[in-house]
Length: 408
Image (cartoon, rainbow, N blue to C red; front, side):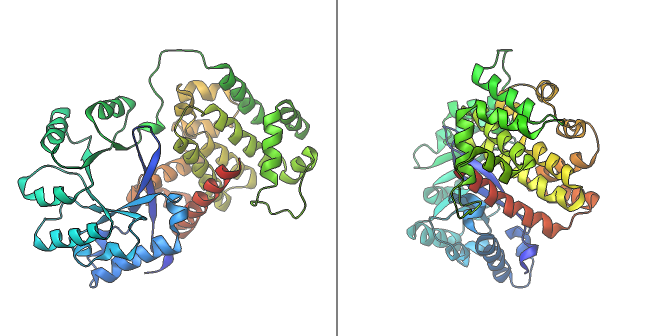
């Protein structure tokens, strides 16, 4: 299996404080499909080698654990032990029947320190031997009622397991899962705005929203950018720290603000200030929102650079950067975009109202993140992008975003 054939996306898993504790990895060539090959074990080994070794775990999960799905055959053949127990969580698919071979293999994995998760769990007495070994049980919020979930938690309270609520799509569902005793949460609830009464924004958020407005004006001049930075001591400090970081590798230390501005250039400066302002807007939000915005920004820019002119690629960066702005400000996207000077085609793409190139790019990115591979492929085709370029762009975007957060 070639390196370019392995497609992987990730979804964050949160604890009760909305901190990311792990990522579930979504493979295009999932383990289920891999076992249709004549040599299923070799196919699975190739997926693991390519995904974890070639793509790199630090890139994929930022050093956090990876939840990975395994079929019965891969568990019996001890495939999870190809990776260290501190790196992965073994997710046992719902169609794995707990016969003697499976139970024995799971006991061996547990003895080596692996965490075991039961996926899409629905209780049946036959699963009790697996429940005894499990560390986490995943419950699908979309396909179960609250009554069913509470009964399950009550029934299994004698076991030392924790519960993970998956497909949690709204803040109301997240609050419900918190109340019901779930320890971990997976879904897109964190990337949607809270439904709030019309309260005014805190002053510091207003200030940084103004910076976002100012910095993205189409007629903005270099001198005005310099004035914006000079007016904010923290921006000046952060810019000099940024320009002297290993990301640039300048031999001599840059101590002049004007020199830093010149070295970055107007387009890169606009992107950097937008990032800093966005981070300051998001001080009370999960860090995953900013990380996700950065990944989308770089992902969009890289893909746009293949099919669009240079300035369009810069606009694609801003589209990705602003794609979570409604969740960051807890306001409607429509209202926010009316206040910010972005190109009209970017606004229409974010609102998903106009079928333009930016819209296609935005949908491609969202479908990739969700692991909706068939839908994703249709957008790749419409944009005329090579699939291998998408994988490379995603991998590089993960690394770039993690690095940038370290120095910004």
